[in-house]
Image 1: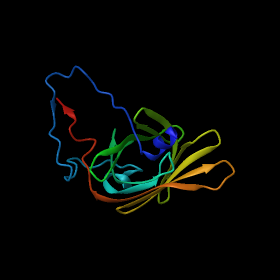
Image 2: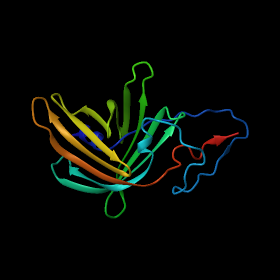
Image 3: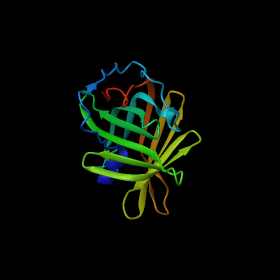
Length: 195
């Protein structure tokens, strides 16, 4: 069920930095409610950009139901060539129960998307497809099954379900998420180092 925990948590990417820039300074990060200072780049995933809050619920590895307050922040880097997503699930006391980070990129040669996700000690690269009303991604869930996550994004509403799909069997819904966009986000472009 470790694979299930990776699947339930949403998204990730590692960033590389540059050294040797003399007397560099850091831009002050605008408040999270403020719009980015620069216009957002065009992207096939710009419909996801912003900050989102809602609920996520499902069944854990011990077949016990759970529900958390779910937040997501989504934004572009590299002129919109990659999209970063960070998800956090909070319990009733406000403690973080899980945190996931992902990057979605598109192969310029094949036109196929890839979804690289990290949570805790787990990471993986999975197929990702843009659909007419959102997106879908999947990952292995054992030798003869997979998890399939399907998201429908309409305006400021993001609905997503996760289904356990055994080979030759009927899908079983084990996760659902319902979010509302609360506003734009300057993340991850804000706070960059400038000379």
